[in-house]
Image (tube, rainbow, N blue to C red):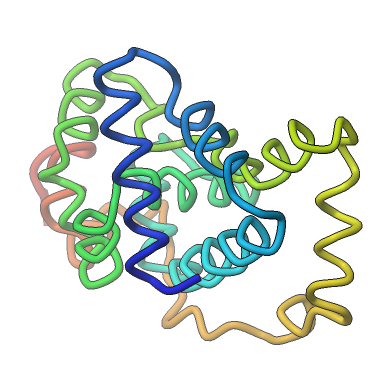
Amino acid sequence: MDIDRFWSLIASARSTAATSGEPFDEVLADLLTGLPAPEILAYAERFDALHDALYRWDVWAAAYLVGGGCSDDSFIDFRAGVIAQGRAWYERVAAAPDSLAGHPAVVAAARAGSDDALFHEEVDYVAAEAFERITGDRDAFYTAWAAHRPGDARATAEPDMGEDFDFDDPTEMHRRLPRLAGLYLGPDSA
């Protein structure tokens, strides 16, 4: 699935979810259910590539601030949530994670003291949900995925996450993510 088709599906699901009040992941699963199985697998492949591209220390630090901490599993959910925000926000975050300080949901969550903005676990499983709806079998996606990507090399490759740093060091967080740290930690006291 080419990148434009992928983002078109995300935009369509966002638009429908906004007008219908249905959860984004449910709407996206509905859209995928209307596609042939190979296209659902192609969607999953594109999703994984975009998801993996956000596997960086600076993005994790942003998730750490937004979530009041961020485990490995939570970081998976955060990256899915960034993808769910659509192409423009994804590209902003990929270029500069500190740009999240301008995201309306992040700003609202910071003001409310909430730590769940942009963490969307369900989005990680939309392709599997679509396969289950089509086949009635929860494991059908994983069987098809194994045939589609035999010996998936992603599991063994070490990603380049950039420079590691201490997320619990407020001075370092202010230096690397000044706007987001200001929003969540207050003014830099250094």
